[in-house]
Structures are given as C-alpha cells and as structure tokens.
Length: 458
Image 1: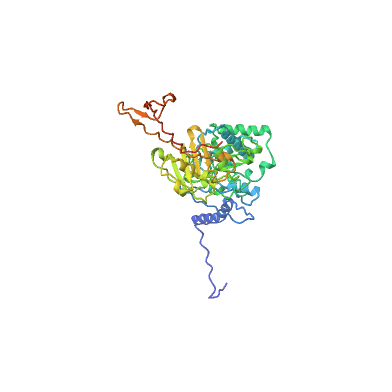
Image 2: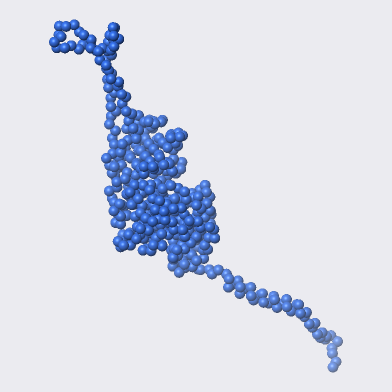
C-alpha cells in the first residue's frame, strides 16, 4: 500500500518499567486512602444553634487569685452537652487526695456546719452516699482555698442572695422550698456530712473545686482540668499552682454563720441569732464575705511580737457597719489570737495599748479571736451604730470612778515623829487639854486599770 509522503509513521510504545508501574499504583492508592482516612479519624463537629463560646485557656499565676465565676450554663440540649463533655479529655497529671479535716468550734457552730454540708450533699447529689461524699469533699476543698469563704456554710451559700450569683444552684433556685428530704434521707445526709467533717476523705475527687452533671455545660468547664467522674458528675480543679495541694492550706474560721434558708431543715439555723459574730456577718440578711475586702484595706498591726496580733484602726464614718466584722476577720488572717479595735474618731484612737477609759468608751467596734478557747466575738458601739440585735452591742461603759480625795496631812509629833490627827476630843474631856491621837494609816491600793476590751452586753 502506498503512503502519503507527509503521513505520520506509527511507532510502537515502549513498555513501562516494572518499578514505575508499582510507583504509579502506590500514588493512586494514596490518592484514595488519604481522604478516606482523614474523614474517618477527624473529630466530629457538633453544630449547635448558639453563638460560639470563647473559653479562656489562661493559667492564673500564683501571685493572682483566680476568680470565682457564678454558675452560667451554655444553651445546649442534654445530648449535645454529653457529647461536648465527652470531648474534653481527663487530665493525665497526678490526682493526690486532700488532707483530712476535723471540725472545731462551739457545739452550735459545729451543728450548723454539719447541716449546711448535709443540705449541699442531698440537694446536689440526691439520696446517694457516694455522690454526697464527692460533693462534700469539694466543699471542704473550697473552704481551704483562699478564693472561697472560710466556713462550710459560707462556701455552700456563697452568692445565694443573688439569683444569678450562687455557686450551688439549690441555694438560689427555690429547691429548698419546693421539696424537703424525708427524715431518713436527711439523717443519712447528716451522717455522711459528719464523716467528712471528722477526718473522712473522699479520695477520687482529689483537690477538685468545681463539678457539674454531664448533661449541662458551664462556661468554665473547658478552662479547668477535668480530673474524674463520679456517676454522672464531672469534677474539675484549677490549672496551674492554684489546683495543687500547696494552695489548699488556709485555716478554718471556726464560727459558722446562721443561714435563714436552713431554718426549715435545721433547728440550729433559726431567726434568733445567738452568736454575735454570726449576726455580724448577716446584719442585714446578707453574708459579707471577708474575701471581698481588698488587701489594701488591711491595716498594719500595732507592732511586733505580741503586738503583731493587735490592731488599732480608724474606720471611715461612711463605711457600712456590716462590713466591720469582715474587715476584722480579713485583717486577723490566720492568727490564732487576734484583737481588732476600731474608732471612727481619729482623736480617740490610742497609739498603743492599753486604751484609757475615755478611749475605750469611744470605741466603735471590736473583734476578739482566741482560737485556743474556740472563741470569736464581734461587738459594735450601739450608741454610734444601730444594730438588729442587742447581743451585738458593747456594754455601755460607766463613767470612770473618781479617785478618792487625799487624806489631810497629819501634823508631826515633835517627840515621837509619828503622824497624828488633831481635833479629836472625848465628850468628857471638854475642859481638858487636847491630846494628840496616834493613827496608823493603811496603805492605799491603786484602782485597777479598766480592761481595754469592752465587756459584751447581756
């Protein structure tokens, strides 16, 4: 067959080398496998009908106290909440157990602590001993942490006077009014609380200060370390130094406040307050937490040594008198013995102790703590500040007793040199010459110095 001169000449293709075929096959396999693998292993993105939440990942340094945020939940369904919570991994750091705690203070104060802790355990975990032990341990951890109040009841009812500021929802959502535990359930909760307050430690929650159920998502949950789960509750601690054991060394105040909300459950939480310090902290029905007093407001002690436990303070006349006790407690800090005396008149404040009777009478407020005696007392000068109960009032100081008039100096007896009194006559000696009578004068004891601390009123 004839071909055109310009027609292309067919050249047979050279066969591919075996190694090249293998390489092309591997490329083709990778092009299919890699996308499939990415899709299979990528985390599932849950889309919610809510605005994205920005979670702070900042670790609070040791020099800065971490903020205590009120309960605020993300608007998600229970199923979505469980999925979000499951996506937050548990911490791989050590989870040491908390130290044992043993309750101290007066009997009525201890009874209030037991009942406050029992209420938290029951309303937060129901009639379940394991859940109650976990909740009770978190409350004890908070009480030992400087970011929270220094009493059991103070921790449980922190922020309860505000509907959006409470730390435990049952204290501000009306749960305590809606239902009451049975007598048997209440006794079981009290038994669990008593164990926690007498040395029993629930080890699994470690030093957790936060928890929530797995069907809700608080805004703070992703910013803390998730350390364990107890049934449906998840437990968290602060990141960094504030979640480690050295941060949990603050002492217990030793005097529990009287909480009116507890009166339906507890006979020791009644409207008639009997402890001046408790009434001091609830003068108008609200709890003034000493932790809210700024550090710059804390005065310096009188001096060093024993005087390092004494504070002489001038108060601003415009200051809320309900905050006097909070300032005193914040000032005394961890001292086992502390005397805090305050005046609103700077001219009456002594430079050192003891105070004079006029200075004591002008005293506006006093606080005395003696931990060795289980004693703490706050008193106001009710002539200056009206208080809701007379047991908060100092006893009105009586006028300083006048010093006895000095005796007339006796005339000396020139012969005997003994002191004599003249002008003393017997009735039968009207005509006789005056005879000097020798009189031995007793030593005059000095008047006792009035105590610088006013005696509490009865």
